[in-house]
Amino acid sequence: MVLFGETKLPEITKKVIATPGEKVAVIEEFNSGEGTYLQESNVRSLHVGEIRKNLSERSINIKHPDSKNILPQLGDIITGVVETAQTKIANICIESINGKLSKAGFTGMLQLISNQSSGRGRVKRGATCRSGDIVRALVFSIANSTIHLSIDRPDLGVLKATCSMCGGDFVRLDDRLKCVDCGFIEERRLSSEYGNK
Ligand SMILES: [Zn+2]
Image (cartoon, rainbow, N blue to C red; front, side, top):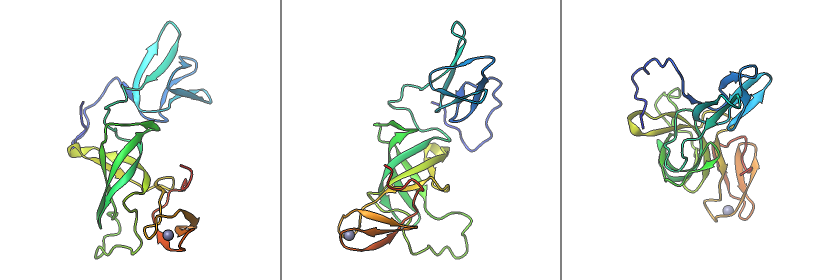
């Protein structure tokens, strides 16, 4: 397994790995096969995987590398459970990669303070996430063999949380959560998909 470092990627003349949504062929060349979908006349990849052409069927397929122990790749969307959340980082135990269960137990690192909000580095009072939350995040770097995660997109962030006072369920109030049992209100960086999991 090759990890992309921070150095520039070597020039790849023939791309063999597709990322989700990437155009891999046009319908005049190849039919939409396994792991692909058709959008207008473009065949696009559903997930990260190896591009394989089946010339006898004239189809293009994106093969998931054997999903068991595959390290998340750049651009993958993961969901996972927050194991620990400190001021600056949270460790996320990855449970699925691009919608497929991952039992390898990879841990991703989510930086909780964005680089833009430098200033004196005072953290907003509301928590981004807390341990036990389920989050959806994007793999934006795998430099130094660390899976760096980002939730800097509306559909990313906390998908499910429970009250830190009593463990009850929350209802969503805009960008905050209210416990249905004890009425406690907490903040999280919520995904637009909160509660859909
Ligand atoms: Zn509660």
